[in-house]
Amino acid sequence: MDRMLALILLCPFVYFTTVTAEQDNVCFRPKLAASIETDGLQRFFSPGVELTLSCKQGHTPVSGPRKIVCGGSGQWTKTRLMCIPKRCPNPDPLSNGELYYEDTVFQSTINYTCDEGYTLTGDRAAVCLANGTWSTTVPECKPVTCGLAPIPHFGMIIYDKMIRGNTTNYSVGGTYKCPPPYVLFGNSRAECTVSGHWTKTPECQVVTCPAPENIDKGYISSTDPRDYDYMETVKYGCNGDYVLEGSLHIVCQQDGNWSEKPSCKAPCSVGMQKGRILYKGQKIWIKDLQPNKVLHKEIVSVYCMDKARKCGYAVSTQCIDGELKIPECFEEPSGVDYTIHSSSLPSEIEQC
Ligand SMILES: *[C@@H]1O[C@H](CO)[C@@H](O)[C@H](O)[C@H]1NC(C)=O
Ligand SMILES: *[C@@H]1O[C@H](CO)[C@@H](O)[C@H](O)[C@H]1NC(C)=O
Ligand SMILES: *[C@@H]1O[C@H](CO)[C@@H](O)[C@H](O)[C@H]1NC(C)=O
Ligand SMILES: *[C@@H]1O[C@H](CO)[C@@H](O)[C@H](O)[C@H]1NC(C)=O
Ligand SMILES: *[C@@H]1O[C@H](CO)[C@@H](O)[C@H](O)[C@H]1NC(C)=O
Image (cartoon, rainbow, N blue to C red):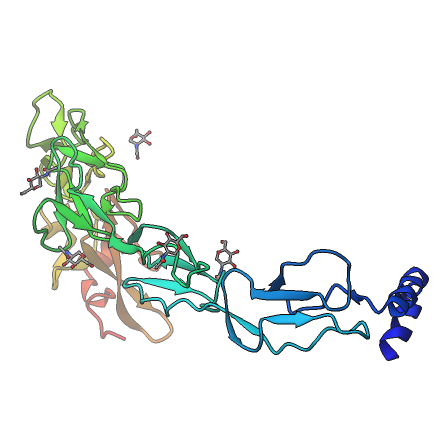
């Protein structure tokens, strides 16, 4: 009666036909589990009609009678037939890869993927077939390999590890080198990539520098007016009392320019006529400095007077490329002081 009520609520038409069916004692098409099928396709069945049940494709019957009969009261006889989906065997593991599946029953799928550095040969997916077998065999994950790395003209490669044979595995790397006068243009690192190809090969190109220029007040080891190769060096020197500042050598660089040239720095004269200086650890009268010349970067001290305390003190100054500044506290003595009272000069009296 409950079923009747439900049908009435659902649809008046159904209610009407149901009433008709009840009156005629016919059976409706039976309601069966989704995995069960039957040979009768019509909507109504007369009392006494027998239907044969079977399991749908990919399912196996486990229990219960395979037939139902339309009873006199419009009811089908009960069936306890159960159909369970076929199960495929558990899939074998995939070495160097992964398999993804949720179930192994009929129509389940397995997806296969390979670890990075491996390529899949075979099918990427398998389906559990109606007969309980997988549609494909387990694929294989084969390591990605590259051939030997292409080598640039005039260059070479140093592999990170020993290579046996003429193939390399994925992720094997190396470093390209171009011997001088060649310079490497591009990426010096090489690697066997996932695609089975090497990274882009760099080029080895000759690099030259123009003939180097001489420096002011100096000389150069080679005056050959030719182009110089990458990594070639020339040497500089300075004339006379000039002092070389910077690097003695310059080298032809990758960019075709020379490294920075040194320069020659001028000596200085100590700009005083009368007085004593401290030079190279010795106190000497300026007239005894012959010639009056100190070299670039050399340090000279002059003597100043602390008038309040009546004592003398040395103040140092440095020769910088021909210029030696006399400290402001220095006072050139008068001729009389210098010749007669020389013992009262700041360099001679008690030091502060
Ligand atoms: C397998 O791959 C298909 C398509 O890429 C996807 O729709 C499905 O969800 C995957 N199944 C599993 C179990 O990962
Ligand atoms: C299962 O079915 C597939 C496809 O219909 C067929 O190729 C295969 O041979 C069958 N396997 C067995 C064990 O019957
Ligand atoms: C790789 O080496 C094998 C055996 O040493 C040789 O038969 C094959 O021709 C080589 N392949 C290439 C591309 O050089
Ligand atoms: C390359 O990889 C395979 C598999 O991972 C390994 O068996 C083999 O020894 C490797 N070859 C080299 C030269 O490392
Ligand atoms: C090379 O020297 C030239 C001239 O001094 C300069 O213009 C150029 O930028 C230098 N090249 C490089 C790569 O430093």
